[in-house]
Amino acid sequence: MNASTDALSTGALVNSSQVPAELLDSIEVGIAVLDRNFKVQVWNKFLENHGAKKAEAIIGDSLFSHFPEIEEKWLRTKVDPVFNLKSPVFIIWEQRPYLFKFGCNRPVTSAAEFMYQNVTMFPIVDKRGNVERFCMLVYDVTEQALGKRGMEHLNEELKTASRVDGLTGLYNRRYWQERFDEMHKLCVRREKPSTALMLDIDHFKRINDTYGHQAGDKVIKMLAALIKRCVRETDLAGRYGGEEFAIILNDSSVEDAKIVAERIRQLAQRLVVEHEGESISFTVSLGLAQFTPDFKGAMAWLECADQALYEAKENGRNQYRIYAVPGAL
Image (cartoon, helix red, strand yellow):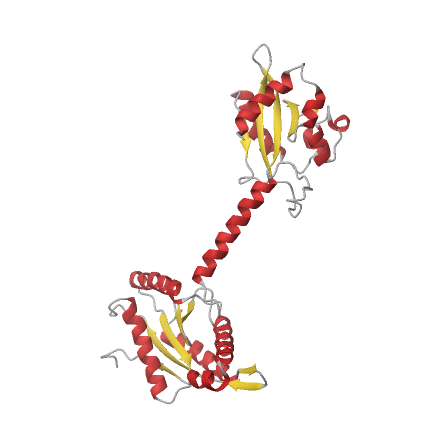
């Protein structure tokens, strides 16, 4: 239903002495007529029922004296074009959820805290062409608003699901890679130290073979929770695949990263996963590589961290290793 068309047709309705008041009161739209001083002249049943204000109690009074929550300066400014330009004005719920804070008592939308409203205000022109009053129409659009909000929430959930690994709650590999490419470009521009950290669970296949894949999943989840506690919001952590995780410690030198790596390593070896009466302990190995402009692309940087991880495993596991830049002292 077009709000401007409704406004014009209802304007004729309000001005017509031939239309019974009962008809105005039967319309499922709020109808109010106000003068330049915002004194109420018409207040129909819809507004009575939802605003808990009887017509005889509000007619002749200022709207603001009965609804002090309405910001008077804002509404007067909003209505100015109605008087000065003889032009209708619209308030839509996306911009302002409501004008009047009415409750919502419809069965379908009763979960809403308030009635979402679209409001149309248009001039009532007298026989001399002057505008001394205006009509306000209040539409209950709660059902439409909740539907749209619900769809937006669903879309946000779908977006999150497409980015997050279902088991760990960390970023999945695809989205982590997208963010990593962006962070790499930022590192190239700023030339500030950031460090890539690759880690995985030592002897994870043995855990799966001995205790089963459900136990392995519990170990992965517990390690992911530990990683979340050890990194900052500005860092980038994700499940890179299987039992392997990738982290970019933003604006962190390798010396800073060593502290984080050692913390993860120590905390991991203290963890105990309980599964079907069994207590499972595990350790992790980590590889670190600080960004340098000499890396030929983002993947070269990550491969250096992976190479350092390989060295940690080759040298006994449960430790971290730092990628040695060729030619560095």
